[in-house]
Length: 162
Image 1 (spheres, rainbow, N blue to C red):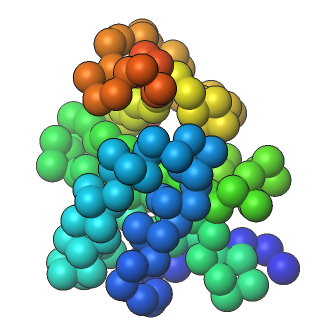
Image 2: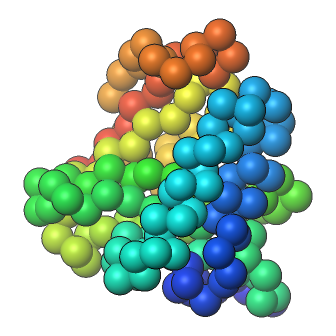
């Protein structure tokens, strides 16, 4: 069966936090340091379904959520920043992340963004491949302000769409 993209709120509260926990499980320090923020993010989207619907979606395979992407549209039309973006560990390497990001770019472009920006940590090699394969261009590396001892530098990307 092929993947589909569905509303975040079609799935139970806690799903976003669980997906993030799994997708960052390759480095246990992520969960230790980010778990509270992931739960706050999850709560925010479920407490504000109109924002969740406009600023993200769930990637679903055989009825099961395997990933999601979110973005911040507050700087439209100038730019939109991709926020959380993840695919469950057991589904990585199958092109789902690329397809998820291509769908996000399509939706963000339809919202009128002229530029899409995103950053990831140096340790997150699959995310770097996802952004590059989806058409984002490397911009720069910068200091990681949140636990650089395990996450490395920040890698910044952008895509000019208009």
